[in-house]
Image (spheres, rainbow, N blue to C red):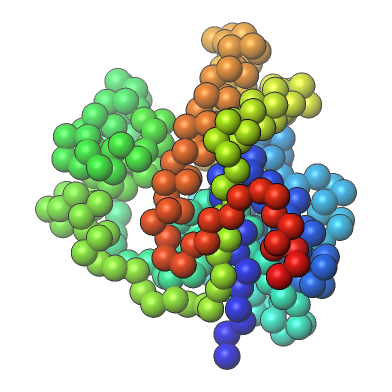
Length: 296
């Protein structure tokens, strides 16, 4: 019999980590991260990894486990998460899955449709287009054939933009339509998913404050050090916060401009996260205070 998972999901800066630590300590459990950026080593400040104190309070899994230059996919996340769950279950530990990466949670809980394989020729062509004309040019191509998927992806997300164009080329259908037609598999684990849903203005204030704190805590210096170690082209360097901090290092933005842009993009990301979770089967939205969950 598979273990029942407690999933704490929600937008960035909604308080997932603090609640998960409280729950795990209360029930003697451990935390399995579902964050696509926190898996990478060395990218710490901009990914809002749990602090040393938080990591010491409760064992965490799948944080800082991948070299930044190592390819890492949702399928690989599923494989490693399954192994962690098996280990925790064998030790009698309740599993608290915590994170805001919707695709990681979906593939862990439900599995994922078997999509067409990569198209190296098309991928090379689109990467060349991005290098010559910018990622926006590739995003425009996607908008022409799959406006629904394009609306969900920022132009800077070249990997997912190219993937959607690959699916369209190989199936003749927009990726959004293909994924709807090929439903996700039945649940892989029994679970309860709680989506933290603070009031929007309160969430945005928290995002603004946390963004400023990241830059005060040395995000630009972290990026400078990462570049010196050869990670300028690593996947997490393309995430919100790192893009803007790198622009500061490159002399393209002031720190104040970077903070403003990062906060704005993070707010947009939080909105997309909530939209995603509203479509998740079985998701229970909860508003603060979250005391009821601690008493459940």
